[in-house]
Length: 323
Image (cartoon, rainbow, N blue to C red):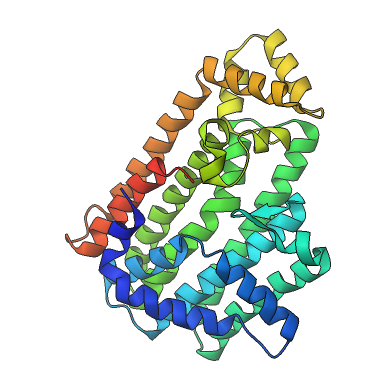
């Protein structure tokens, strides 16, 4: 499964989106334009605008409002990535030095603010107030998820319930918003919009579960970040939560002690082996499959179409992706 196959029904529309998106990234400020060019060199998978466009095509026709929604979603995503790198003190993004690593935290935060404002202005300019409501709720949830993660990591109180609240808000909220935005751009049917929103929510949770698995099983030359990066940062994700719950108290205490200190490569290898030996990888994969089955269920009743086929394939892609 690859993205080229998934985007096939919206290839032309994605090119039009790209043209509009690039236009919104620039201003009369030279420094801002230099950084925007730098960001565009790191072109991502464009999963979020793809979701907007496919969701619109599933329930109606792609129109001007759909392009506004896709641009808003990608601007918001770009802003959150820049801000995340500042919060996480990350030096790399997609194999490139991060904005904060080159230009500093102040410039990075302001760039993120600029992209967020540009996205909101697109909706205001075209009086698409539904879009503002959807994205504002997503930003609220993302912020709450980040803060809950910080709060929980400080107190070491992360169980499955808290973990799923964190990833639902941090990651799934924006992917859910993308699907709802696409539907809202093409139909007024509230029932249909909720189905696409729920499809996106479940896809988003599975997407983060796969991300968390890649920290244990990924290839750093493909993912762009070293295996065990989350472990080194002291992040407790589902594979580790499950392994800790199913090991002896003595082993669990030892692992928690390890991840709360400055980890060596040997420590990281030990934690990865611990998670694998107690079934953390298999369990997380099983849960991700359950979320993807739920996601497919929300669009299963729609008439067969290329857009529906691509959304079903996207669920499989989420589970199979290696970066």
